[in-house]
Structure formats: structure tokens, C-alpha cells
Amino acid sequence: MTTDDPTARLAGVLADIEHAKKLAGRTDAVELIAVSKTHPADAIEPLIAAGQRVFGENRVQEAQGKWPALRERHPDIRLALIGQLQSNKAADAVALFDEIHSLDRPSLVSALAKAMESGRRPNCFVQVNIGDEAQKGGCAIADLPALLAEVRAADLPIAGLMAIPPADVEPAPYFALLAKLARDHGLTGLSMGMSSDYPTAVTLGATHVRVGSALFGARV
Image 1: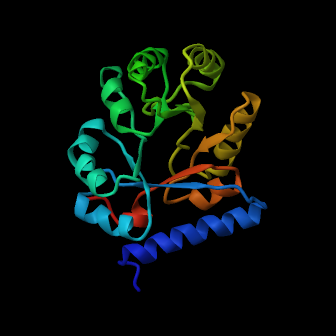
Image 2: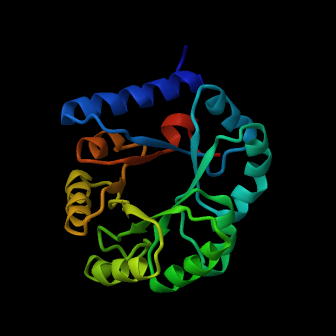
């Protein structure tokens, strides 16, 4: 098999995750989220056939266009929303996704709480702007305690924290900081690590890694 083979790519990523877990002395599970944003159904099907069951999308509208048919054929698929979520799309997101990794502001807490009155309760990760970057989503570190208090007061199902470190710098300190913030707030879930750095994230405690290009190749 070549690196153009989706089955080989998936096996390689899973092997990297297991190696990183072994280095860290971990025996718990790490969820691989295959980031399928911008990729069509025919590019996703080979990974499903190879056993991958959790996929990540950035946009509600794009996911609505391709996943209902795929899930009809593969009802055990789980979907994670990993991109920014507008409050007016909260109901659509709750209806479609099983995990939401971008909860980052009080207005979205309110919108999700209302949407979850439908009975669907996707797990939520609070996104932290770990590098204090103006162009990125996520709540400021200083605002995290207050936002978490609102999430808990609204009885949203909180799974943990999510962050994207600044590009082109060593990510390990940012992963370590997110892990510390999670511990400080009694949270166990850590959504961190992408194609370029997911082994490092796993060694530092990631429970969910979001991998796109290492599985699908260059974005289309």
C-alpha cells in the first residue's frame, strides 16, 4: 500500500497515536476525529470502509449537504463540529452533530441550551484562545472560569476544553497549558492536536485529536 491509500494513511495515524500513548504511559482511549471538511462523500467513504467512525466538519451547512446520505448508509457514524458556530445555527448543529468543539461565548451557551430542549445533547468542548490570537475563536484564558460557570449553570454536557495553538511555533507548551487549565477546572477531555502535531498532543494528554490532511491529503 502507498501513502495514497486511505487505509494505509488511517493505519499510520492510528499507529502514531498508539506510539505516543505508549511513550506517555497512557492506557486510556484517544478519539481520532477525521476532519472531512471540504472533502466530498467519495473521499470519505474509503475511510469509513477502513473502520473510521468519527468525522469532523467546520461548517453546519456543508455537513448538512453531505452527511445525511452518508449516515443513512452508515448509521454508526458520529460527527463533531470543530469550526466556529454562529448562535443562529445552534439548533441545526444540535440536530446534526454528536460533539461540538467550539463553544466559546455566553451567547452560544444560551443558544445551545435552548436547542438542547429538543432532547439531543451533544457533548461540548469549551474552546480556549490559548495563544491570545485576535484572529482565532475561543474565549480568553482570563474569561474561562466565568464561561465554564455559565456552561454548568445551563446544564450543558461539558466534555472538556479545546484549543488550536499558534501556527509555526512549538505547540507543546500550549498543549501543556490547556491540560493544566482542564485539571484546574475538573475537566478530563482535551481536544487538541492536528495533522502536524497530534503525536505531541497525545503525549501531553489529548483525548481527542482532529486530523485532516494526514488522512485525506491536501485540502480540495
